[in-house]
Length: 333
Image 1 (cartoon, rainbow, N blue to C red):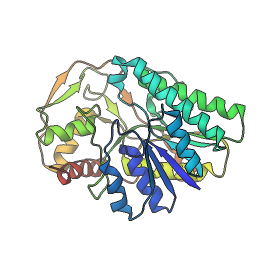
Image 2 (image 1 turned 45 degrees about the horizontal axis):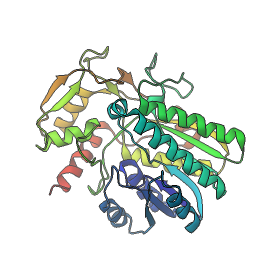
Image 3 (image 1 turned 90 degrees about the horizontal axis):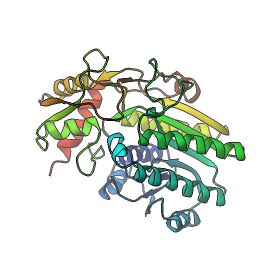
Image 4 (image 1 turned 60 degrees about the vertical axis):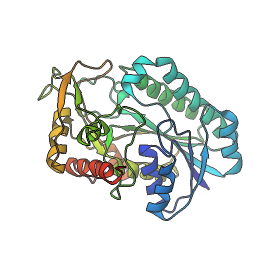
């Protein structure tokens, strides 16, 4: 019995794969390398000393997905695969809706055909839209401010409807806040193709001299320094959240929703300063106009994950910054 990781070669997927293999889970990875690199697979093997099956398949390729299920006894799916940049989703809404929603519909249809009814879904704090208050609890009203968030919210509804239609399903919706950091080995980290969309890899590329300066999008938000505040979580903590969710999913069917965050909000400039201090490097930045779809403040109440899953974060912001930079230094060409 294996656990299928869609998008398992990506930033969060690869770290989760390590945690699953270390917990003696059998893993199968499906990835199309649209925002990941093939050498990640060997790095996972190096870190864990364990092997797994891999398929280079796009979720929009129904025959390819069917082949994965036909050749493996898949017990559960942790579904990471999807386009994930807020700003890009505003520019390319059709691509985001088609890729994220259609790919998941195909995946669930094939799962149903093969009687695999356990899915852990990578959702996002973007489903809370612009929250009226923080910290954010799971029962807060849901809305979205960009197409990326809309795909996540629609998929939450679709997966919930799947359970309503068949109560043998277990659907776990994990609402991530902002994952940063990297594996302590320096082998795995966030290494996006092209110009980074997320803050930490952008900071790293500026600190490394590959980009001239960091664009800070907006300094007129109603926050302590005017820049956007987010809940940054170490990717290894997030990966462990998936392992805990998987274990829980085997015991209790239904729809289960969990915030995965630290409960602490840091502004963009807080992160810049913490990174400079932790790594003794400079990160030049300029203030740029706000980005479409961004909100002022967003951080989690993760009490439910602690109470139900027994999960809590282990790493502070200094460690997140150190591990992020260590990954860059370790992988310099």
